[in-house]
Image (cartoon, rainbow, N blue to C red; front, side):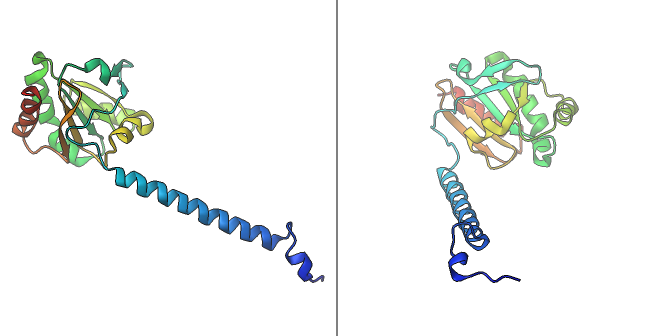
Length: 186
């Protein structure tokens, strides 16, 4: 059995030295992650009056819908998921609102958040949802809006600025109508 001499214990290639370096690297990595999280949390969600974040939604049918192409129209953007019970509470009312406003040029976009496509399509069929929907691939759209959960709904005025932000489900068709009418009146 050999013993480590003090000179060997402090050498750059000793196991103890590498262990210390590894611990410090992990601590620094965790601090960097914590800092990034705090900065992101302090940014907050996009709000009323903000310009809508730029994004392109690829629909379940493979079509591309760019928010910039919808400038000049009122757009309702609803983040939802098939596993979200609160989303089910508002699904039928969102479709009813869409049917009321589709001929007036109001666009509805459903953004399916962190879901399985088969289950998302079953959800759309179960609630008879006919407005444009697509998955949030890589959660890029939800990150741009900095959503905190689902459902969340954003109404965009014709000028491209947010006129309404709803966290949680709408409890009635009248609430959806109010949000859309506010955007149409601007």
